Image (cartoon, rainbow, N blue to C red; front, side, top):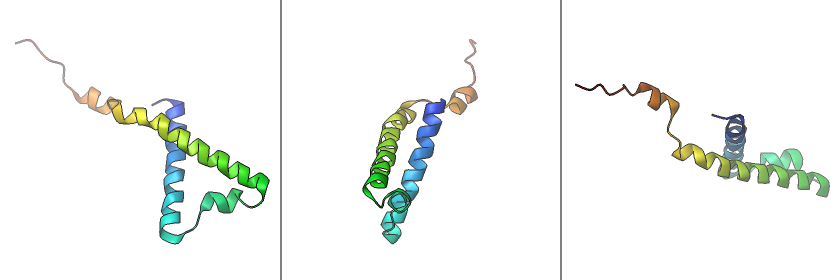
Length: 79
């Protein structure tokens, strides 16, 4: 897994936790930390945008075969 994919996955976890808080408690953590005035509200939009881009980057992880699965496969022997 590349560094970009790891950072993207971390941002997706943060976004998932934020959505969980919104769904359960109607509390937007990103807006609470970064949203307030117009300048900090713009920073919250940047965070939301980064989480969205991270989702697109992590789409490749769905279709990439796992290294563990590839390592577990035994080589075929000709018999």
